[in-house]
Amino acid sequence: IEYIRSYYYNKLEYTRFSSSVGKYVGFTEYGVRNAEYWNNNPSELSAMKAQKEVYCLNHVQIDYNNM
Image 1: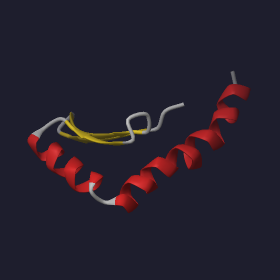
Image 2: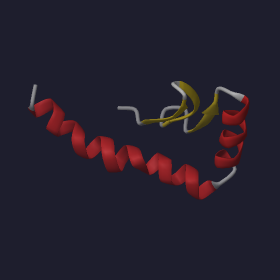
Image 3: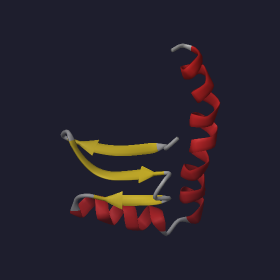
């Protein structure tokens, strides 16, 4: 299971957090600046890493039961 949070502007993804990478990755100049800022904030990183357990692991059984 992987948690991904992407940020878009005008249909262009500029930043993404992936639980498998464990940090933010920027795809544009603006996105790289955001990623650097968020990656240097330990509370932001720990909050995003916790989202995998909060959201994904609590809902995966519901999805599998509905198949």
